[in-house]
Picture 1 (cartoon, chains in turn red, brown, green):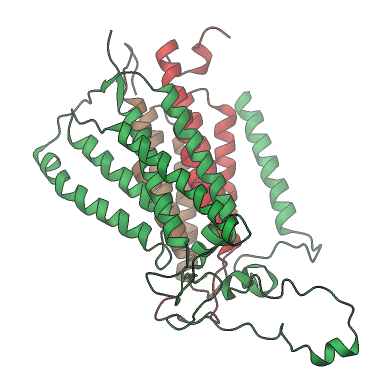
Picture 2 (cartoon, rainbow over the protein chains, first blue to last red; picture 1 turned 90 degrees about the vertical axis):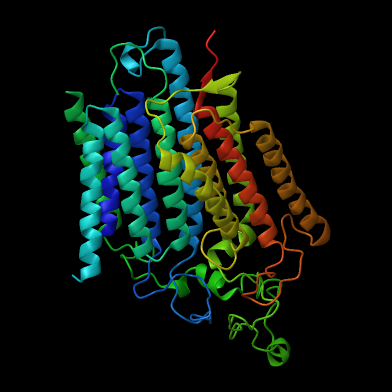
Length: 111
Length: 84
Length: 274
């Protein structure tokens, strides 16, 4: 059930990327798409009845039922790279605003 | 459906609705606040799916850094007749 | 018109994804339903049991009666990893996600650190020059101005705790560094004239990144593989254990914290009015 919801969130993000003309809303749509895809990847690795993949003094053997740790490592990387892309895109948006005076892609003159 | 699954489904539906509101709103500051709310609900989903590393990372980055970058960009020097 | 076409496109894409994932039974490539993943059919079972390099190196020799008679059953049962007792395991870290990110797939983490460095470098290029603070529309209240100094110290200590204990508790280098950057952001918000010394952070970031690559080269010289764990791993669950993993996470935490501080300093300021 949660996988359907995350696919719907990805589709909402793609719709935003297709139709918006404002640069800030384009970056917001890209972030919505990334949240959707991160939730989907973690839901692939879920095992019903599993516990978090950390050895503690209570769960102290490696024979218990653990949730898959490999998708979590991938999503950790993906979140950090999403931040880097958002920061760079917002720096570009700031420079464009300084040069053209607007955030709307249709009103920017020149090529 | 058990209570936990119902809660997950409810939060997922709220996330999709907030996403649609974020894209179709007039003011840009509304979109940014909706994005921050979507990140927070995703943190709850990560905790329920037993992924604490990912939950801490998304909580710090989604609330503390991405939202603030957007707000600093929106409140920089404004030309006349432009509202945020 | 454009909206209708894009809605149709998106719905068609959704139907296509749904049909590809959830219908049809072309096993064994079938997409496992939610919650029914069987870990013993995936490679993650070896990450959990810390037996990734077990069984490697024994070449596929032709099975003959002599070899089968005197070779013990080395594939039979991997040794159980017990918290607080197992000595000299393969990675020695109690947090399995940390052992994947820093030890088994450490090269991917090096790539991620490089991508973050390039993004911060681009932001530094675009928003450069002599800067002054951009003035917000509010005046910080009394609680914000004086409470921020207390909370700043607590936040920095918490961030350092998160990345030092990366191999024992959830977290690690990336959220720890982000918490430190958020602490400096708090100082930016609480005072209208505060500016961090960006030069110090740039030097710290460069040094931390270079030390990570040097740790990898040391692994190549001592162990034989780039980024191999060359320090001895102690008991699973101790603070001083898991070889080179805590050192790498400390370097990553410092690097990410300084980078994000530089990005925030670039965004909170604007150029000097001519």
